Amino acid sequence: MTPVMSLKFQVGARTLASFSCRLVRVAYSLDAVLAGAPPVLPTLPVDADGYLVTSLPETALDELDGRSLIMAVRQRYVRYFVDLSAGEAAWLAGLSGSARSGLKRKAKKLAAANGDALDIRRYHDAEGFAAFHPLARAVSATTYQEALLGSGLPEDDRSVRHLRALAESDRLRAWLLFLDGAPVAYLCCTAEGDSLRYDHVGHDPAHNALSPGAVLQVEAMRDLFAEGRFARFDFTEGEGQHKRQFSTGGTACVDVLLLRRTLGNRAMLGALRGFDEAMALAKRAAAHPALAKLAKKIRR
Picture 1 (cartoon, one colour):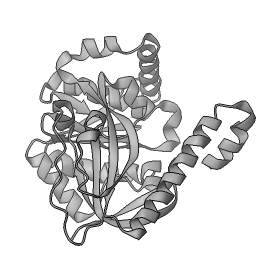
Picture 2: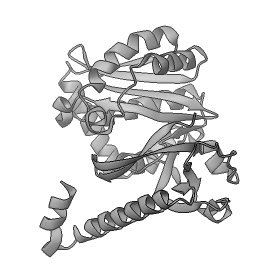
Picture 3: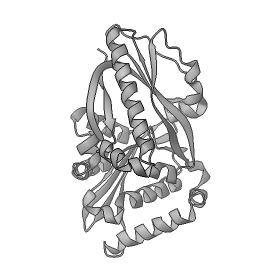
Picture 4: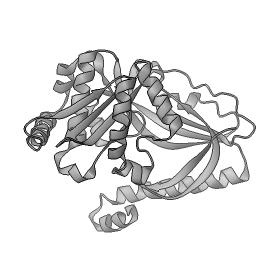
C-alpha cells in the first residue's frame, strides 16, 4: 500500500492545516543530483494519488514526464554540500574572515563554560550507536525540531533498528557535545553513496547562548576531513544560514508534486498554490517598513 503523506499549509515551523495523500516519493540523492541523472518515475500504484519528487535539479524540470498528471513545484532551494576531498584547510579558507573568527570565539566560550575544554564524543559503530542513542534522544526531546516539526531523532523500533544496521555496516557517524557531563547537542548522519547525510541534528535550547550546535558542526567536519571516508557532506533538502555558511557548493533543486487529474486534487493544488503565493507576498512585505508589523503577525 502506498504510504500516506501530509501536504502542509506551513508558516515557518507552524503547520496551520494539511491534506493527506497517498504519494510515491522519488528522492534524488546528492550523488544523483551532481551526476545530472535524468528523472525516471516508477509505475504509479493504483491506490496512489501521485508522486512527490524531491531534490530534482531545477535544470531537469523540463525533462520530467508528468504522464498526464497535474504538476506543481512545491519548493525551490539550493541543495548545499561540502566537498570533503578538498581538505580542512581549503574548507576553512572558503569561510569568510568574520565566520572563522566567530566560530573560534564560540568554541572558546563554550570550552570556558566546561572547564576550558570541549567535550565532544564520537560514535561510529553499532556499540557506539547503542551508547549514543539514549543520550541523543534526551537532547532531541528538548528541541524545536521535535516539538514543532516532528523531526527529532527517531525512537520507534523500526527506525532504531535501521540506524543500528547502518552503524554495523560503517554507514553511520554520530557526535554528542557535553557540558558539565551532560549531553547538550547531537548530530547523527548516515551514508548514501559517497556522501554523508545531515539527517538528525539538535541542541538543548537552554544553552543557545553557547552556540553548541555550531561548535559541534565544526568539530564533526574536522573529524570527517581527517577520516577521509566520504567524498561529500550532504546538507540535504532545504536551506538555512548555517548550510550556506559551511558549504563549498550547491545545486538549485525543486520539489515537485505530480497528482492524478481528479477534481479533488485540482482543488487541493489550487489551495496550496494560493497559500504559497500569499506567504511569498508576506515575506516580501517584511522588507517594507510600513508593512513589517503586518508581516510579523502573519508569520506568527
